[in-house]
Amino acid sequence: MNAKSKALHYGQCCGQWLEEGLPAPDAHALMRSRYSAYCLERTSYLLRTWHASTRPAEITFVTRVKWLGLQVRRHRVLDADHADVEFVARQREPGGRAVRLHEHSHFVREDGRWYYVDGDLPQQ
Image (cartoon, rainbow, N blue to C red; front, side, top):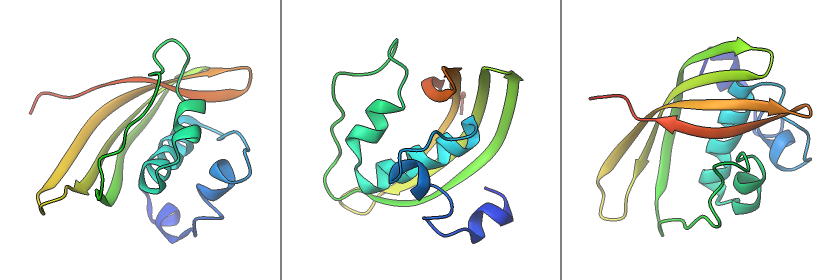
């Protein structure tokens, strides 16, 4: 996340997509808002922003997971309707163990809205 993004309050950043239902303007903004949705356990938002071709029937959250931060490493626009976002999300699982999720996520825009399609986990 760049310095400007860090300085924004929830309502100025991800809140407008989650709370007001406005479409995220790009894949980077959608990625940040989906991270916020995981932190807030907003199942309906996560499902609504997941592309229908890969959307799970339901999402189950691990009880008492604490999200520690999101670092967007790269946002790459492939064309007007496709983009990739590389990120690292950190969380602490119940029992105290910290875990990092590093993913290259794929996004598509349809009818003016961006959707998460899927992601690849890079080789460690």
